[in-house]
Image 1 (cartoon, helix red, strand yellow):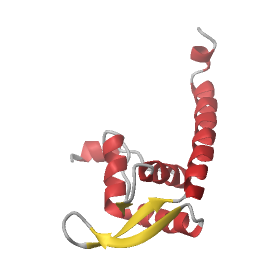
Image 2 (image 1 turned 135 degrees about the vertical axis):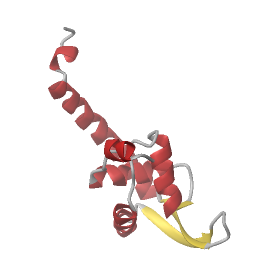
Image 3 (image 1 turned 60 degrees about the vertical axis):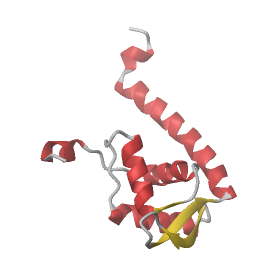
Image 4 (image 1 turned 90 degrees about the horizontal axis):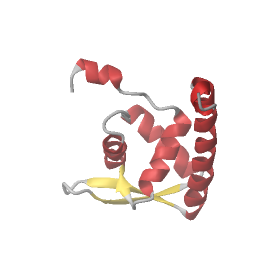
Length: 119
């Protein structure tokens, strides 16, 4: 990746990262590195998830019981922790997605008021 591409990537806010992790785990259990790569891939490499942000977020979500963790073997035959969404995590994902939609709409109205008024 070029330096220009690195500068154009967007760092995630803590709450947003939690939401994206929960959404990624909706697909099924996966290990940490794969969570980061899925978020990057699904965002067309706009969003970058650093290990220094990912693992504290995973621990925070485990503590809240929104995700659970199990030991397993990765696709390259290494020991790995696999994270999965819990029932409480599914409920939280619904709540947080609704809150995100509301917030994104409010921000859009502020940033582009003429578009909202049909001008």
